[in-house]
Length: 171
Image (cartoon, rainbow, N blue to C red):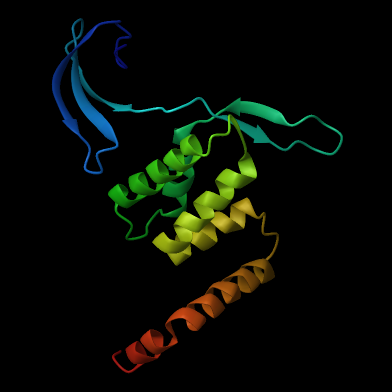
């Protein structure tokens, strides 16, 4: 493993342990050249996935390898300054990656991945869900936020009306 500090090619593993959700191995390493310590994560990859991104009208769709880090960054940005533990974000991203790998498709449209992230964020945190949706669905004005938030409130009222009304009297 190449050292991120001095780019030396050899490092020694000092400690290995599974992550809390048992989807990867966390390894503490030490560079044999400069002595710096760093952490790496090892994950199982069931298959290579290619993401198909839609291009403008009349252009061929672009294809690029699936990159878990892009989803992690998007979800982390949506959850920024929210009370969402990093562990929950990791579980969401790992779950999406497992779903994609077990779908059996070598190529997955980017829209499919976006919808999976939306579904996961809807269950995780409503504010993060709206933040992600605003970028993913390309909200252009405040009215778009209002309309989208209204659909969330309607869904929440339909599924948990007695719970919400029970909490109003407690404030």
